[in-house]
Length: 121
Image 1 (cartoon, rainbow, N blue to C red):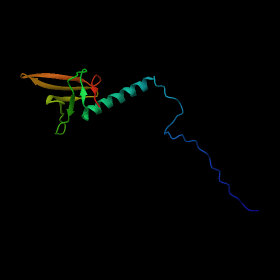
Image 2 (cartoon, one colour):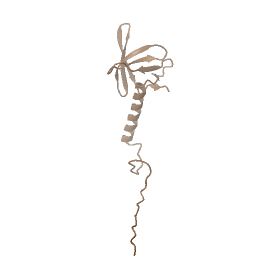
Image 3 (tube, rainbow, N blue to C red):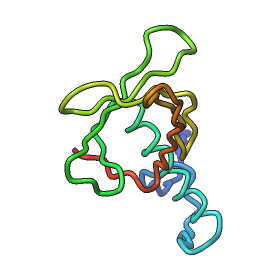
C-alpha cells in the first residue's frame, strides 16, 4: 500500500477591507458626528494654509489669499487678489485666524472664522 499525503486548504473569505467588523456604521452616532466635524475643520485649515483663494462674508469684491511667512515660527499675511497687503497674521488655529492691521496709526484686530469663509476653487 502506498501512503498518500492530503493537504487540506482552508478557504478564507476576503472582502478587500482592512479591519472589517461586518457591522454597518451608525452615521448618527456622536462619534461619527465628531469625526465628520474634525474632517471638515482639517480640510478648512489646510485649504487656508496652502493659499487657496477665499471670500469673507460673501463679499463680491473681496477675494483674499494667505501667504506664508519667510522665517520659521513666523506667521504670514493676507493679501487681496487685486492689489496688496491686507493684514498680518498672529495666530492660526483649527477654526480661527487672528491678525492685525494698522489704519491711520491705530492697530485694528482682525478675526476670521474659517467655518464661515467660502473657499474658491
